[in-house]
Length: 428
Image (cartoon, rainbow, N blue to C red):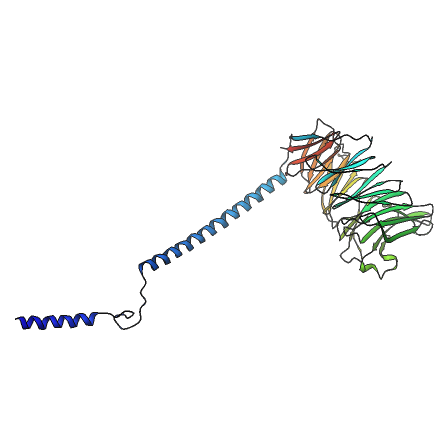
């Protein structure tokens, strides 16, 4: 009996040995990788974290899309909203000048105040950024981008300034009629004597440039206006001359860059299409677009080829042109409308010369400004604003004096200077 038990025990031992699996081997003899419990847990954690990251990204994308849609809706609402009232957010006293002459002009995002005895650059909180003292009998000012030039009309002095202060003073030998400046500080002065008109040029520090334009009155005419491109290398002038006993107008372009070297006197283009429509004002809108404001006409020029300017549009204006305004994007023209239901008509054009809208209106305006997407008409006691789509945005009267109106930082704010005060108002 004991012998049988011994045999059975041996058999069971052999069976158990056959069932034992060697490390790294499966029961069938193939390799098998064993993963510990801690490794499986780590892998599950990584997969869960990946799923969470993907879910967060989807939520963030959805949130960003919702915010963009909300911002677009808000912008659309604000661009179409018509304001009917206003509140004064703040007001600040501006130091008074002893001069009887005070003018304000938009300069960058702020305001330049100039008088007969000095100029002050004011930020949109009414603080003086810099001041300049001088003595001018009849100050005139021209702004282009980050530069402004203040000159003494019929005098000989001109001051070239940027947003940090006066960069230079220039002096002319002949009396100044008009001035211009580029967005990089090149300044031009239109002067004349008894026989000829001249355009003289200066660097931003006031030193002379070796450029010059001269027209003999008895032959090629009298210069009426001059404008510099933002770079300062392109120059546009309007001149009048006599032909057959009639006054004629000529628009001429010069190029003082390397491209203009091969052209006689740097003259790269001339246009006489405006015939007897006298053109008292010419302006570069940007480096590739220029505009002229003639008697009953507008002209839009394309300057993609700087040595071959092109007259893109010649547009007749019904009624007498009363005032114009321009920016690097738009040109606005107000003409009278005596035979219609309304007194005036406002036409807005793109810089390329395409009509954006035309609107008739009745309002006793005195000044017009284009500031971003606002066309601002105002007099010394009231204001009317149109959007660049032609919609009336605001019309109201003020209980204070108005000298100039420009946009504030907020979409519904205006900065108003007048008398000895600067104010920010919020439209609502």
